Image (cartoon, rainbow, N blue to C red; front, top):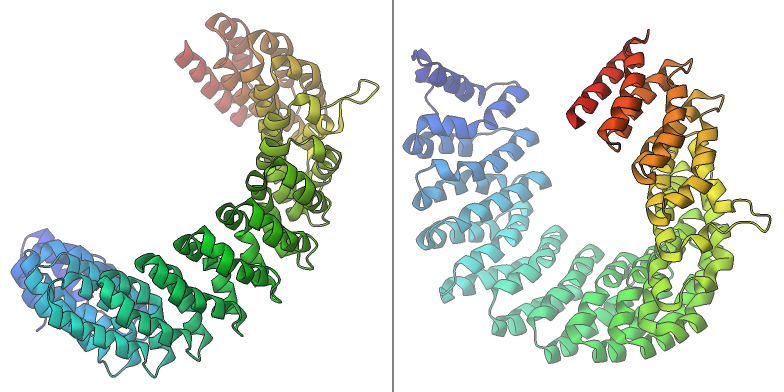
Length: 601
């Protein structure tokens, strides 16, 4: 049956528009078809539930559209039509087009069709599921094309879950899933391995420990590494469903076998999943059975496997405890600190600080401190940056005094790195470091009383050649002032920033003005009126319009930090002068700032 477009003769414009959309469903132009599909809910609303079920849905099921984009849109829209077919007892009509879409070649379309079919099924009545959704799952599982059988792997877990209490039907589904696990096509076995965990979650415990565990063992020996690596993810999923004893007896040996798999992708998957499995079996079993496997992964020949393994070092140490961590994991960690791959060292640097709370002060000083120092001296900026970003964890255990000698040179090197993103990252960490270590450590003065290297660096960032760095530098000075107080800023920061307003390059003058604007909010009204406002007023006469309109914007922000008398006496007269500026942008921003002053008043 085809949708009747006779309503085009109607005088009602809405019906005419709907008729146009219906016609466009059959148009040769892909974009017109796509637009119409996106409006299926509008069409269904105009047709009513009965005609939607009898005409629109069958038309979509019979459609032979070969454009993947249109097919994907239909799969998405089926869920939105659930409220348009007349209630839960009629939802099964939506399954027909979705069943067709679940067999197409394009993976994205199939996956969306499966997801939509499962969502529709959850809204159906129990009878509807038994009579329509369960048979759909079985038809897909017995499909001639492998694409249908792949989709069946995603549909069967939901169908099994929704058929609770129907033992014979469930038995058939378990048999169908077992066939899919042994399918001759690797893509089908891969899908079966991918969904085995969710299928097991819907099963009773006796079936999990019987049939499902048998399927798991079968898949662990699959000849295709793409299947085996998906089975790895089932280890932790099944481990949570099985008793601890069964898990130790059946799942742990499989995981240990995967650690020695010939495919690095399988070993990589084990490295990512090992901690979850260790949680399932408990600390004692993790120490006795899996810690040696983890050691092997940390020394794997493939860098990707070592990276994944290093990422779990901190969490695994917490689980197995300080004794086992010190004797088994830390020696391998020391080796990774000098690994030939910079990505391995960077991964280690991002987690190694997390070992300190587990090991405690003495063990951290004896075993981890050399690792920290090695990584702080690493030639790759990302490695040093990752270490510095996690200093807080070490600071809580041993303090940073032991790292002091290496820390400041590392920060200085990063601050002057040729890659601007590295410089930006270290700028953002400076206020956090300041909070942890204090002004005396980070901003220590030279013996002659001059500002220390880090203070100089924080100010020099205002004249960086990259705008994002200059903007971050201004914000950084504000945050540091919040940490160390207005007195510190008045002594060490404001004089240097004010001097920057005289820079011959106007972009650097703009950066200094931005910094002063932000500092005005944290240095207090007296410092603002005595030191910042005179500079802004003089900059309002700058020869470059860009500087003047930055001043105009700055004055509006500064006004928000001052009392009404100061605004009327200092800010408004300066803005009124800028309102008569020859440059349009300057006048615009001056007017905008004056409005802000009025709102404040």
